[in-house]
Amino acid sequence: MRSKKEVQGVTISAPVSSDRWLVGMTMGFLLAILAFFMLYPVYDICKLSFLKEGVFTLKNYQSYFSNPRMFRSLTNSLYVSFVTTMITTFFAFFFAYGLTRTTIPGKNIFYTISTFPLIAPSIIQGLALILLFGRNGLITRHLLNTDWNIYGATGIIVAE
Image (cartoon, helix red, strand yellow):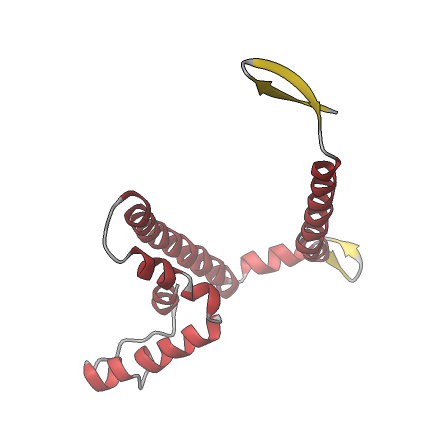
């Protein structure tokens, strides 16, 4: 395989390095492994959802959608996902715009703060929110003396 190079206005062909081919093959192999470990469990769950006692059926879906509690869980999940996505996208846009297109002082501090969710485990963030906003939390009970409940859709949206 040959690639084109321009030298002093003249385009010439040059052989492509075998290192580039090796890197491409390695990346392809790693992506295939990643796709397998991500997609196979989803495929397996979908396959099992159509089986009952080893026989293909739609009864699992019929019982799920006919049960009001189960259907409510689906609508709650979709609601929380939609609202969280909209709020996060809104704030992320302005945060990214401020860091890339403006000359605000202290950009490095904001860059550092933006990596905290990647570094700290989710359990620590969740525990902090419960200690601050839980039923007997520092802010909800001791500072504001309110009965606001973080255990529900609103709490999940705030936590995200």
